[in-house]
Length: 367
Image 1 (cartoon, one colour):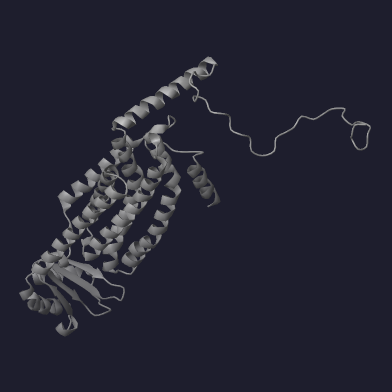
Image 2 (cartoon, rainbow, N blue to C red):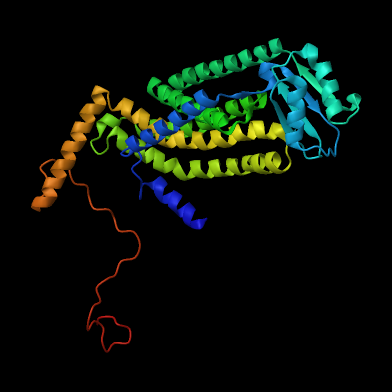
């Protein structure tokens, strides 16, 4: 941990750095590949929408059922004519979810299912959701997501500038697409908990992005008045300066979410935990990636298109070329600010030893 802290301090001071901006085409390519895979999974497999969005019924059995999950799925399919999702809960009971059925036939399905499970129908708990309610929930979810996006763009455009707002929006769409695509590939059910998880990870992704943008805004004040760094150089410094902090906060956030996903959902069989924890786990990782590898490099690309930034880049490159030519010829460059003064030496320096001084005199002083 001490080595990681030392690495973070050196990155923050600019003593070492990694060229994130220079390799941005690699990050763009990786993101495009992952996004295409997510879209293909979404188109081919589609989302497994829960009954909150489709309407349907959820039947919960008493504890300590001897019927297996596969048998319960077969019984539910025979009783309703629809595919069923069955989960075994931590207390041994079964949660049988049948989406898309007519709620008017729920009592008949309950009777048939209870008979197949060898249960008293009164002991089989049933929760019904109408299709109109499910459609209303889906519409509200999309409206909430759209309002969130609009507010984010407005805020970032006011607090920073429109280029940063555009880059943050692209990063958010990137995170949503990947998370939704993973849901399609894995086949997890999409519930209101999933929507809550998506909104949560969008806020977390913005947190990392805004931290880098704030550092970038501070360091680029009066950038055109100097000729040492281009906008991309300073953007790269901003990423390196906040890199370890972003990694630390992401890892700390992922650990409890991983506990929810793998322990709560996997071992305890809590379906609700699966719904929200998968979106949080995938979204947190994608958000940390996009804030470093997508949002800031995209801002640098947009800013470098400005005439002022193009002129600055020409001056910086010309100065560097002049400095390199001066180094190769062994003579300093012609401009006064091409070379900087040598840094002051910090700490003790070795002093030359005076020979034969004070020899033979106990005090070493001159007479």
